[in-house]
Image 1: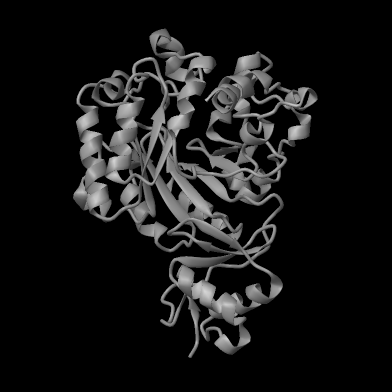
Image 2: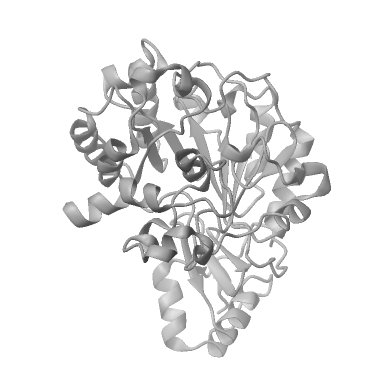
Amino acid sequence: MRYYLSPRSVLRWLEMPCVYDRVNDELYELDERAFEFLRECASARGGDPQAADRDFLDYCLGEGLLTEELPRHAVPPLIKSPEPSLRYLELQITNRCNLKCRHCYLGKTRGRELTVGQIETVLVQFEEMQGLRLLISGGEPLMHSGFDEIAAQLSAYRFRKVLFTNGLLLDRTRIGSLNVDEIQFSVDGLEEGHEILRGKGTYRTVMRALEEALSEGAAVSVATMIHGGNLREFKGMELLFRGLGIRDWTVDAPCLSGNLSENPLLQVSPEVAGTFLRYGFGEGLHGGGEGYACGLHLMAALADGKAAKCSFFALSPVGSLHEGLRACWARVRPMPLSRLRCTDISCPVLDSCRGGCRYRAGLIDGEGAGGALSTARDYCKCYEYDIIHKA
């Protein structure tokens, strides 16, 4: 008997050897012996159970990481990643959109999109860099002129694929051809609150698509932005999303940029917005790292062919995609928490908030978005302190 890595499992060589379950979105660190055994399991000949520790073998079988069936998928390259590793890539395939949301940070765009060839190159490079999670965004990604061709490529890659969508272009037929592991729908309130941002008739359309995705067995998550028109709807949204079986609900406040700057009635102060963050649940789309601020393992590939530390920093790119992801990633400098001024006052929630969003912190203190010495104290207090100490 031989054992093989299951179709949902892939070896990744990050700062340490790991095996990643892309369906359940679980990352397992490995010691040298476990890594060598699973490397054999990833090969065409499979792994000999006699070479493995019995408890470890039973654990892998119980977690669904191993199977007795011969693999039908290609084995991705196992190349040591840079440090820090690029684990999460936001791939903005287009900035075209079928809505003009009143909070959109992109503001007015020029309808740009990456070519299918550019996207294929990015996918190959992200796989080689041991990527874990691809966040397919826009604009509205389904507006890309070659989206069906892009979707057909996705099944060849072993990282987790997450599609961000407003849901207006999804129906049951199209859901089955997406080749993604998760669909994240933007739902910014109940009917009234959602449509204040996104327009009349959009709520029922997105909820219909969301429920169809659930009925098709898709992993579904929701993203909600806090704004002046949905503050009374969060309890109702929580009941709705938990009742539907949503896996993750991301709640955040939009940055005061783009279209939101022209809609003052929808703007919410950090002190107010912070009290609504407790409604979110789940693991979120990208993690950080101990001792570092937001974005330790994240980069964005933008529709204009540039790369940036995240899509908020589109006006401060770190390079062009034609240079390659690795070259661009080498220019993204991680931010140690020790460089934030809030460490000087021993902020009690620093390990929880990690200085918050660097772009937003720069907007709050007026020192420029994401400045290296931009204070995070006000951000921490507004978004975390009251929740932790007054709840």
